[in-house]
Image 1: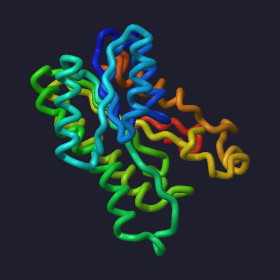
Image 2: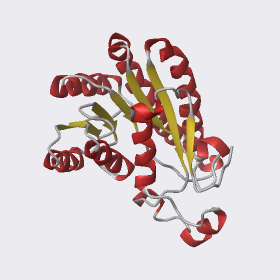
Image 3: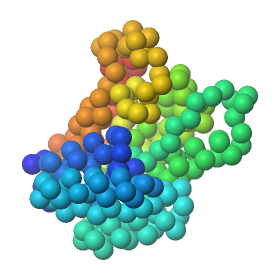
Length: 245
């Protein structure tokens, strides 16, 4: 067990990458609070975790709303006793040219992907400072490193912001023994990428294949465990070699 008896809060944990992350942490010993807009999906994943013998709670929350984030964190602590690991995974995707992008669409993507990461992280700071420990793991994107390829500019910009926010928060919390890191997935085989031209994409990836949700969950597990205790402010690219830095 790599995170035995730790308590994780995973936003967007009821589906896609979030589901795999939640189940992976649970298999390695963690109890998990699952925040998601879709409560039914969150409850389904919580049930799977409980079948492993771990504790789990499902909570409905829109991470772009301050009041709902405060309630999400409070209920997580009340239900599971504390929080040791925060995974800021909740996000929405958008495609389309800038010239055709509405102000509303721009704002909604930035609100969920970037402001949501800020709100959830800010809400956890006092607890982590008091404990003088904690792990914050943010999910960014290759698009945030190179600009939108198949993604819209709003999505790419939000994820670039997550990368920079990670560094800022890492510097602020390092004196309190808190690690803050980021993962930048490339093209991962999920429902979100189902409409992408798969065969063409594979030709552009040095490893010749799309990533799997488990590849991202494994990276989250590394940052959540004590194996990464001397790493903070880092962005780990998991992209099959598309971007090498």
